Amino acid sequence: MRTSSTFSAVRTTCCGRRSNALRQPGCLPSTCRPSLGRFLHVLALACSARSILEIGTLGGYSTIWLARALPVDGRLLSLEVEPRHAAVARENLAHAGLGDRVEVRVGAALGVLKDLRDNGADPYDMVFIDADKPAYTEHLDAALQLSRPGTLIVADNVVRGGKVTLGAADDEAVVGIQRFNAALAADPRVTAAVIQQVGVKGHDGMAIAVVRATGPRKRGQDEALRR
Ligand code: DHB
Ligand code: MG
Image 1 (cartoon, rainbow, N blue to C red):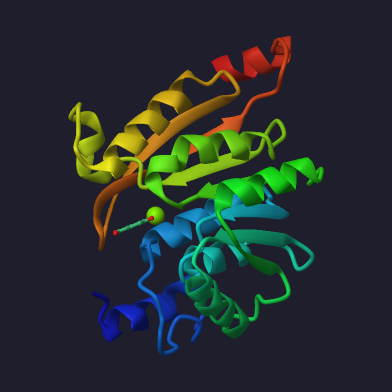
Image 2 (cartoon, helix red, strand yellow; image 1 turned 90 degrees about the vertical axis):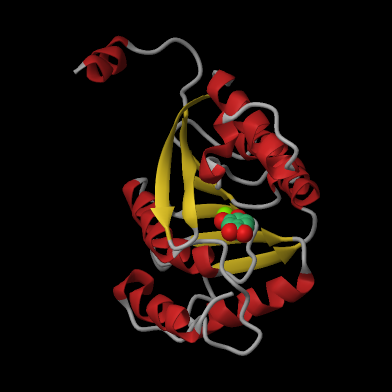
């Protein structure tokens, strides 16, 4: 349960700007901790993202951090399965002055992702996966089909207090993340690393993956990597 002082901290630290974006009645608890919101913001800036796809909106907290890293003509599409969450997120985004840059689309993510691909959507510069954990591997696969070499794919909650390292688990979220981490590590289409993070929600972490160029690496690229 979030306290009003937590909301106050969120308001005053969101991208270093004062914002009432997350204060409305009916505000949903965020799945994303403040320091991690800022981390996402920095990642979006680091890859000069002009288009971002977010899988899992909830109340729009990480959406706001990501969208504030976009240029004014940048775009973010966020997918949310629960219409009530989407409504709250849209309100929060409007309060943050980001309504013009962000679309929150309601629907089951895998279906929406398939529609995007079938309709020839341009590849995204950055994808943030933060939806239901059992389907993370399928979300990764769909994200890769909406990517180009260099796209940054970030996935939240891949450490889960270290439970992902303890072998067979009962928790379907842990099992889903174990499957995701194994798939990510084995996938030749990406180079990935996991960072562990400790914040107000405890010990967790994010996977950060860069989509690789297809075909053999150029000589200069290999030399740059060895340096
Ligand atoms: C929780 C945190 C998350 O980042 C998430 O995506 C889902 C749930 C949690 O702390 O419950
Ligand atoms: Mg999360």
